[in-house]
Image (cartoon, rainbow, N blue to C red):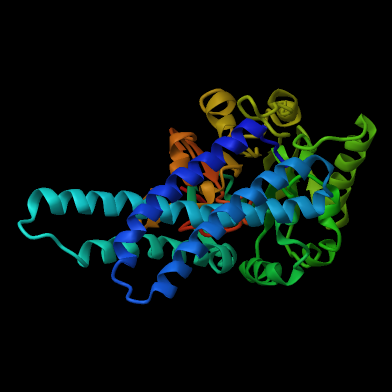
Length: 405
C-alpha cells in the first residue's frame, strides 16, 4: 500500500474543507426555499458532520497506518478513498457549475432567477454522485469482452485464427475473498474456447496472502494449448515495508508458486516456441519494465536470446511504455500485450472515440495500437486499485484472434 506523507494528507484535507465551505455557501441559496427551520438546520448539521467525520477518519487512518494489519488497512483505505471521491467530485462540480450559472444569470439575464439556477446546480452535484455510486457498486463488476481480429503479413498459416485471451491487473486483494464475483469471468473465458490464455501482471496488490482460496477459481480456466503469465509492478512487494529481505523474497516466491498451482507457466525474462503443424511462433515474457519510479526488472535481450530466429514473435510485458522505449522499431516483435494503466478506471468510450485522464500520462493506455507492422494491445484491467470502482471504463477480458493477411 503506497504511503503518503502527513503533509500530503493535510493538504488533501484542506482541499476538502475549502470545497465544502464553498459548497455550503451555495447550498444556502437552495435551503432558503425550505420552510421548515428544523429541516434546514438538520441539512446544515449533517453536511458538516459528514465533512469533519471524513477528515477525522483520514487523519486517524494516516496516524495508525504503519501499525495496522495490511488486510484491514486495504479495506479501510479503499473505503475512505471511495467516500472522498464520491463527496469531493460532486461538490466540486456543484460549486463550479452553480457559480458559473449565477455569474451568467447576473450578466445576461434581465430578471434574476430565484429557483432555476440553484436547482440546476444541485442536479449537477447529485448526478455525478449517483454515477460514482453506480461505478462502485455495479460497474466495477460489469466485465466486458473486447474482441479484436488482428492481421499480420508474416503470421505462419498454421496459426491462422489463433485465439488468445488476455487478462491483466486482476488485483485479487481488492476482491476481498469474494470468489463468486469472478465466476462469470471464468465462464465468459471458457465459452470463448481460447487457444492460449495470458496474464500480463499485477495479480495481487502487494501480498501473497491475497491469493488464499483463489486457486480453486483459476484452476477452472481452460485453454486448448497453454496458459502463460508475466509479473507486474505490484507483484514484487515493492510497495510494502518488510521485516527482512527474506520475508519479501518469501512473499515473492509464494506469488510465483501460485501461478504454477493454477497451471500457468510464468515467463521471467524467458521465451519459448509454440509449434503447430511443423510451424512455430515465439512467446516471450519479460519481468516488469517501466519508466522511473517503476522498477526495470525486465531484460528483453535475455528473453529474446533463444528465439531470435523465429519469424513471428509475441511479447508479454506489463507496462506499455516498454513498447515505445525498447520494442517499437528496435526489435522484430510483432505483437506486444500489456496492461498497467487500468484506463485510470475512469473515462468515456463510444464507438471509435475514447478519452480518459490517463492519456495525458500514457500515450498508449487502452486498446489496440499499430505503428508500421508492429502492434500493441493495452488491456484495461480486470480489477481495481485505490478507487473501488470504475467510471465509464469497464473491466476487460481481451480476446485477440490472429489472422494471416
